[in-house]
Image (cartoon, rainbow, N blue to C red; front, side):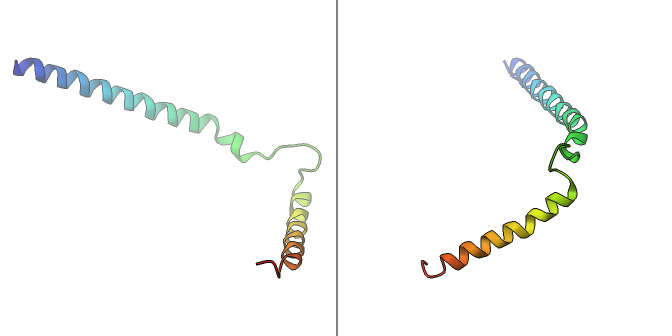
Amino acid sequence: MILEGVKLMVIGMSIVYIFLLVLMLSVMLSAKLFKDSDVRAPSGPGTSKKSRRDVIPVIAAAVAAYRAKHAGDG
């Protein structure tokens, strides 16, 4: 009776250990595969570094205009 319980415990722990090992290996593999794709910027019209830097002042001006327009609402 106890031997069957120990056998079941070993089988269950082995299955969990193998599953976690496979999960860890798949996460490490996907990290290596997608590492370069996250770093690269999309290449196309309007995606140069200069154009992206020019967007920041435009967004800041839009936020300032919104806040000035709705200053008395809150």
